[in-house]
Structures are given as structure tokens and as C-alpha cells.
Length: 152
Image 1 (cartoon, rainbow, N blue to C red):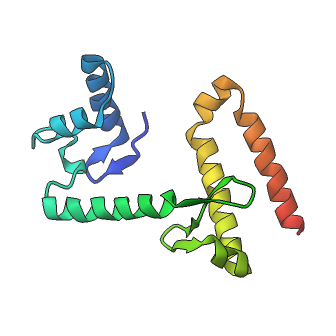
Image 2 (image 1 turned 90 degrees about the vertical axis):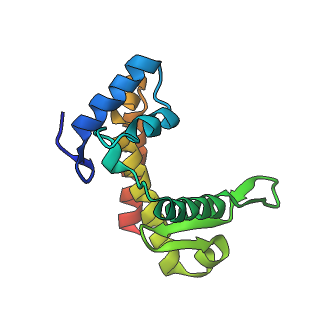
């Protein structure tokens, strides 16, 4: 098990042990059960959570705002549902598709953010995707896109 951090004081190894315990004892890892167990100040998971309702409420509203921004979809002339706002990049916020289409610099930022997301996805799901046989195809497709982008 690696020693990478999940949060301050909580290593991935400890989080895995605790989440495995919950799965063993309940049959599945449900967020409600994780929070219930983490409430105890003696739980190794306790420090991962914001127990101040004021702080947690603010973070939750930011998450809801992000979900709202990303949920806005409208049908195009062809009837296909399309996202209206996209992530410009980590920490840079979101932009309307109109703005992305009109500004080549923002379009390049969005393309890079999308590329980074694909690479992250491939890394995150490598074990599962290799077992299912589609990781190599995703990597090939990504490599082809990279070559085209570099030559452009």
C-alpha cells in the first residue's frame, strides 16, 4: 500500500483499511455509513471531514454551484443535448461555449483541460480498464490526438 495522503493525517492505506472494514461489515461502502463512523473523534476517518457546519455548508454550496454550472444542457439544431458551460482548467473557473468558440486562447485551455481529464481517467481506471480491455484503445486514441495537436 502506498503512503500517499488522502487528507491531512489520513493516509491512503488507513483510509483503505477503514473502507474495507465498512464494506466487509455492511456489504457496500455507502457515504452515509462512512460519515456515521467518522463522527467519532477516535475514528481514523474523523480528521478528513469538516465538522463545522458553517464550513461544510459553504463547501457544499460550492459543490452545488459546480453541479449547477455543469448540468446546464440545451438541445442544438440537430436535437442533441449539449453542455453549455465547460471547465477552463483547474482553478480557472468555467466559460460558456459561446465564449470558448469565440476565443482561441480559452479554447486551447479547454482542450488542455479535457486532455488532462482523459489522461487522469486512463490512470484512474487503468486496472479496471486493462481487465476489460479498453485502456490500450483509450491510450492509442489519446496518443493520436496528441500527435495531431503537436503537428498543428
